[in-house]
Image 1 (cartoon, each protein chain N blue to C red):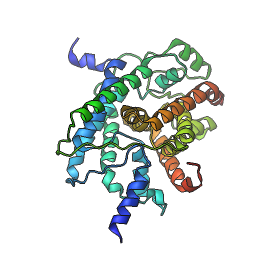
Image 2 (image 1 turned 30 degrees about the horizontal axis):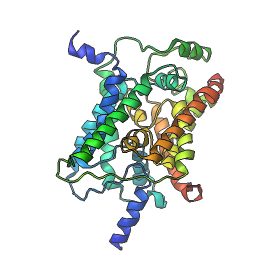
Image 3 (image 1 turned 60 degrees about the horizontal axis):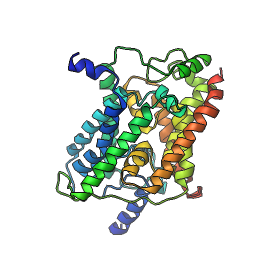
Length: 190
Length: 166
């Protein structure tokens, strides 16, 4: 198998995890930056819709590196999909596939479930809950918590911060509640 | 305008975040930011190739049906801990010769309440903020609406901040 064919396979956790962990020292060494992503949402608010709210009145231009970083993530998604696409269908757990099939989610090929997340479901209750309410929870929750999976779970735990451990446990708690107790009802909606 | 006061307030406001406390005093030309774009591109490729941005992988994680995401987060944290330890031990400097600074976070109720709310959103959308950007890059254009909703959520937090328990 050629190098490019190997690259096109899904990357195992023991390759991807350490590479993501290395983002922490790379950002520190190239510019003394603490790894974090959700703050980019705050900088966008500060730049576009500050509305005289004190929380958005700061020199966002000082943090513009973060917007370059997330812009890069978007481009990276494009590169990985268009140039390094995996030719095989995505493998998912059989129990999950069976459960999702009950809710009419048959297409498990992409990275998002196109049967429930697409432009036409956006105008149904199910779509609004998943696409819009889910997004609001991400933005509100991460800022209230002071960080997301990158700022707390990766950067915060790397520097052994107790508040980040508490935040990470709460992320997981919320996730377990949603995936097991609430999401099944949402997915059953027409 | 009182410049020093302004800066202090600004720092306090920004330091409530997990990051966002870039106290580097060096001024660089704007194009220096392209190095962060490159790190971001590599990061986005890893996100997609390791299927971290997959809604299905997130569902598997929260249903304990796969080790994949636990392996990724766990090995990323271990790599991060070792890297930070090495940086501190050998007093490694930035490429500009600055000392690397770390900012201890303080505990507040937001980490519990906000953290749980974010967890709910993470499992429903199958994405945290980083993967939202990557998913849009993969061509899932409707995720732009999720991203705009997340920006709106951040704005709502800023608007109601004074009234929320911290």
